[in-house]
Length: 126
Length: 125
Image (tube, rainbow over all chains, first blue to last red):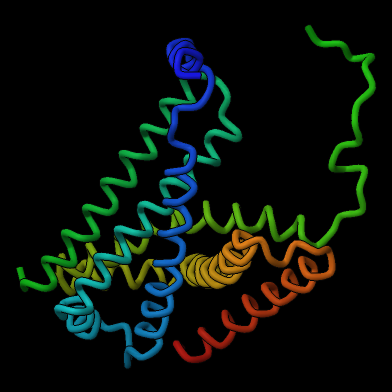
C-alpha cells in the first residue's frame, strides 16, 4: 500500500493525501461563515447609512475590526478551496491547470492582505 | 483509443430537468460570483482606509445602474449560497437524501434566498 502510494505520487497519479483536509476545511470554514455571515449582514442593516464616517466608525472598532478581519480570512480560505475545485473540474491541460491554481492562490492572498491591512489602518486611524 | 460506436449511458440532457439540478449548478455559480465579489468587498475597505475622497469614488461607482445590479446580485448570491450551504451541511450528516426531502429543501432554499434578498434591500435603502 505504501509503495503503491509512493509510485503513484512519483508518476503524478493517485491521491496527494490531501482530500480529507480539503473536505474538512470547506465544511469548517462553511460553518464559521454561517455565523460570521449573519453577523456581517445584521451589522450592515443596522448601520444608519453608508457614509465614510459611519463605515470608519464601524470597521475601526476593536471587536468589529477583529470580526471583519476574521470574516475576510475565512472567506478567502473558503473561496480558495471552492475555486480550486472548479479549476480541477474544468481546466484539464496540466500546465494551465497548475498555473490557474497558483494564480488563484496569489490573487486570494493579495486580496485578503489588502482587506485586513485596510481594517488595521481604520482601527489605528492611519 | 476512442470508440464512437460503443453504447453510451444516457447523459444529463436525456432526463427531465429536476429542480435539484438547478440548485446544484447555482451553488457553484454563486460561489464563483462571490469570489469575484470578495475583491470588491476588499476594494470597499481599501477605499474606506484611503480616505473620504477615495471612498466617495467607490460609492459613485457602485451607485451606477451596473453597480447596483451587481450588489443586488451578490447579495442574492450570498443568501442563496448561505441557505444551500446549510442544506449541504445537513446532507453531510446523512439526512435529507430522500427525493421528496431534497425537492422540498430545494424550494425552501429558493424562497428563502429571494425573500431575504428583498427584505435586505428594503431594510438597507
